[in-house]
Length: 157
Image 1 (cartoon, rainbow, N blue to C red):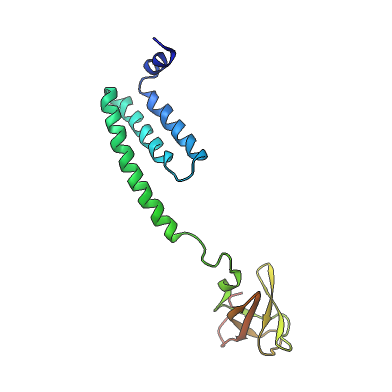
Image 2 (tube, helix red, strand yellow):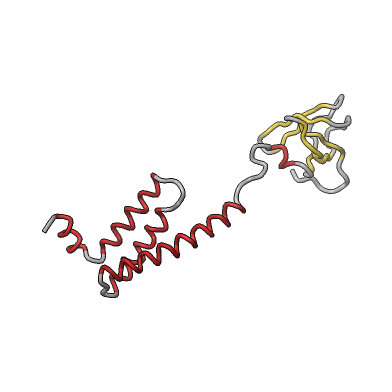
């Protein structure tokens, strides 16, 4: 009897757990979340074989069925999450501020000024306005925010 056969016989149902953990470990090295679903299936089969005495053939069939089911379910979940996730304004930070209202801390003179938003100071352009005026960001022009006087509602920041 070879060493591998002896290890397989001694581990019994724990073989599936070892295989599952190896497959989940391979997921770190391979992109695409493929090994993850096979690893989860192997761990589920290992858990089942701890409680129910199954032959290796039945265990293998259950593993294949579970692998197919978890792979399809996982792909569906991942595609659903990836379409909802992400930040559409990631590479256009200024676009996040369009429509928001802010209070000018410094006056807007000769069509140019600055506006502090969170931890960033933005260059702004618009009509001449005194400090303390509430403005609305209308659009972005390159790296500059274009503002206009806001109506009388409270500012966002």
